[in-house]
Image 1 (spheres, rainbow, N blue to C red):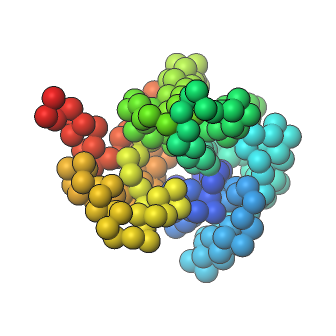
Image 2 (image 1 turned 90 degrees about the vertical axis):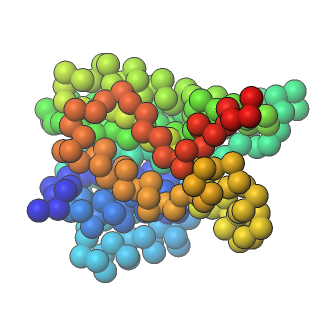
Length: 258
């Protein structure tokens, strides 16, 4: 039996990167998948087609994770197509602007927080309400980053949002433990996704950027998806409120030479 047989999974940011790899892996493991994308229907359709060609079940839904009405619509579509969602992966996000706090406009800071933190809050809230109404168990996986802990100059927008998402995860874990809803966050280091397109395109840039990673390489999105699969499966039924880091040893390297 597939590890996610009879599950219904919502994956945000599923048209590329970690979300794409996760949606496709979950479908191969038996889940019916809701492929949520923002404004990339062509790439989302490719994910949908790949799932279908492999014998899986999926629908694609366009939504802005920052919009409460859009989030409700995603769950309505999920219910209509497959029933009650029992797995949620919050993978949608935007990267740091590379702008110092002194030079950053409030509109930009708020946009990043609304995408990386408010969006997952809205999806988690709708997911929990649905599970409670159906008296169903569930799994929430919030994709954060090693930058939930590691600060980076020019990335206050991103680091603040990921640190906030880590503590949202922990609070939810406490609130939901007795209801059989597990909530964990997955914190990747460098991953070869569109956020790191320059490193994908240029081997020299990739070598420079991976120099401080003990394994001397970035992760592939599929490696992150495998960890998400574990967290979504019964094998992780006793895991909640935890951060699962996948960074090739990066965090431990940063203090060397001090």
